[in-house]
Image (cartoon, rainbow, N blue to C red; front, side, top):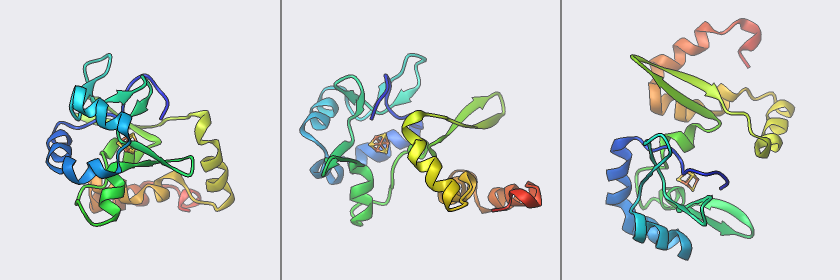
Length: 159
Ligand code: SF4
């Protein structure tokens, strides 16, 4: 919920969010609804990439709060069984960020101080990032790719 651009969106995700917007709206904040009303479900970042719109210049339009904890209105509608789309793949994969090159993608770990508690919990419970992100990695790249990833890791890294 901080930053100068929303979450990256793949082109096909824009129409999925548009198609499901009426089911998502009940969980959105008033500010988020106004942002979507004004901008639509996507905007452009400085490099021209599709991103979710922001309100107050920093928070994703789909963020809402319960007891001072930020949640995603798209994911809320999904968890309640109202839509079949959990959230944009860039959000699902975070803190992995995908950088596209000609013919291949590079997956980078995005280090950010606001994730320190999650890093601490991951170390304490010995959960590697690629394990924690198994579901979105399979969603994006498929089971076969994920199995190859596991096979390619040194034995010491297979936690
Ligand atoms: S998870 Fe939801 S609220 Fe958070 S950035 Fe992604 S779309 Fe926005």
